[in-house]
Amino acid sequence: MDDETDPLKPRRPGSTDPVGIAARRGIRSYVLRAGRMTDLQRSSFETLSARWCVPFRPGESFAAESTFGRTAPLVVEIGFGMGVATAQIAAALPDRNFLGIEVHTPGVGKLLSEIESRGLSNLRILHHDAVEFLESCVPSRSVSGFHIFFPDPWPKKRHHKRRLIQRPLTDLLASRLEPGGYLYFVTDWEEYALWARDVLDSTPGLANRFPQGWADRTPWRPVTKFERRALTEGRAIRELWFEKA
Ligand SMILES: C[S@@+](CC[C@H](N)C(=O)[O-])C[C@H]1O[C@@H](n2cnc3c(N)ncnc32)[C@H](O)[C@@H]1O
Image (tube, rainbow, N blue to C red; front, side, top):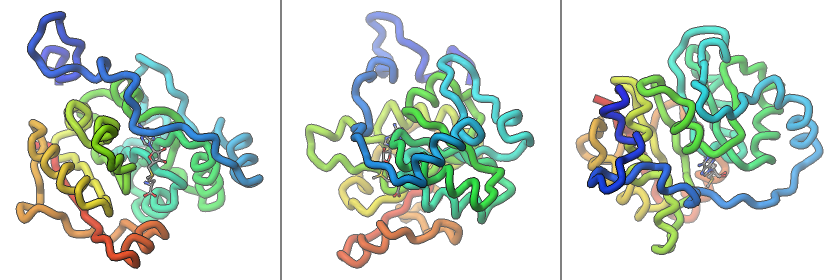
């Protein structure tokens, strides 16, 4: 996508175009809490960040090839939490490059220890706000897949504006996907699932690959502790798989 058609290009004053993401700054999809770190998380964070974390450099293009030392489809996960699914998926799909993004420091420490102990050379971490990074550093049509698993549902109406899946954030994701690229979203929050399906349906350039609505579970997405609890408590797991035309 060139600058003229980029939906995220800053708008002229008085323009009737949809508002750009920059105007939303200050509304975050997370709240930073001072989480306690285990000794392993802290030592992994201190000793392994330099090796496996990519720096956030506003305005500078993320150079996937030199970061991973090879050319391979790039999958970006937004909000990996403790990285349990992230590590297992990276191990199961060694022919893809994975970039996991998370703001929560204990989770970054935990996933760093997994990268090291499992020898996951196809996984890197960005410890920063995913929206800012995607907007400022990720070229258009450069991502082969986005994973968003069990994002914060922000259930109260006054907090809906914090949801990751909403426009124009989904326009940003669509613009960064390469043709044929996918967005894989999973939630146990029924109302967010319906909301996300509507939002993605209305995002230009994205199409639902499952015309009946919900997607089938992929064989490579592991069942996490969180998901098992949701199932035990009787909540359905909803999956969405949209592709870039
Ligand atoms: C409910 S947790 C889910 C974690 C994990 N995906 C899972 O399935 O267990 C959502 C995570 O997304 C992270 N997050 C939310 N918005 C983010 C953003 N804009 N950039 C990076 N991380 C974000 C939060 O810090 C939180 O750890």
